Image 1: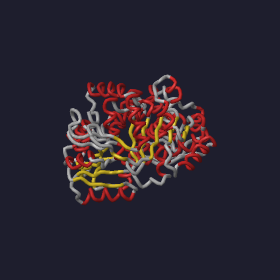
Image 2 (image 1 turned 45 degrees about the horizontal axis):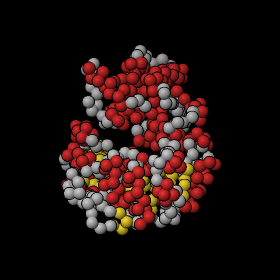
Image 3 (image 1 turned 90 degrees about the vertical axis):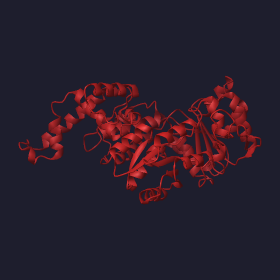
Image 4 (image 1 turned 180 degrees about the horizontal axis):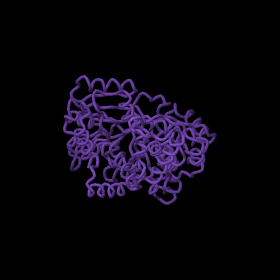
Length: 463
């Protein structure tokens, strides 16, 4: 993972960089945002950019967007300044890290914003066979096509193959072909020279050159327009690329991995994907099974995600109860591993008992019952406590948990829903996209709730 630190390298920023290096990151430094932008244009890419809040973060993020440089920005500031944190998040920063840095917090933030997790759980026989094949082909330079439904872990598998390859110490560069408009994708892939088109304010190195010596992942390659497929085919065959506006070919040395959630053979038959490109990509096909077809991996994956998000949210790690595990195993998981991960993130925030209970697991299509489930879980926890302890007559002698539970009695579902939404927004420093993802609701639903609470005079984090 590549980290760029932007700002004066005073002691706290230096310490953050040292922590990142210990966690396996490759760190580079830029004195200010202009120097950072120049480095990014030159192909010194970054998976995460940590920027001092004293730098013009909003302008910098705008420049990244204008030049289509996709790298998440994490703001850093001294003394956990709440106003600075909110301002940074509003400007577009993914997270805010207070300085001096905490090692575990740095690690959690870097993992959260990059989604860099190459743990490959493969206890189920179906998945074991897939991983065994990946282990065998990883040391080669053969092009790999990874196929499977959305959410099956194609990017995780790509990382896994790269880290098992002879290029593991070189760059791993990924590009989501579906996320970039057709007219901009060529520049992202091959780069451009200054003045090549409107907005080309300087030479920009493309992903092929950025990945030179390492691995290039073209995610969802089936979304690439046929006109660009021909140029990609030439780059794969001849190992040279042409920058837009350039006058000489540039040699590249990469290992190519492509992914698709579509049936590419069907796309070839329909004329949507070039047959010659398909054969060039499909040297090795790693087909990832849907989660429902590898049921033996559901328990360890669920527990791994529960532990991960308990740690990230400073909550005690809990074992998943038998009833909860049966509920997880009985579900069909249309969103595959990604859906399971989001479900367990939500679950650890809703769970009220020493073990994760089945009622804390809110599956897709049940988001509207979330507040009710939270209320039911809280009421059940109150009942459990009441059964085990004598009535508390003197609140001064009650534990914090007992007082919290007692104060909960009499609240409406709407009260609980508001409390849950406000708490989640506060946890996400007002980032609505993150909060909606954790809550399992659409950003539109969350926006409507925020507008309602604002009209009612409720203070909303980041509002």
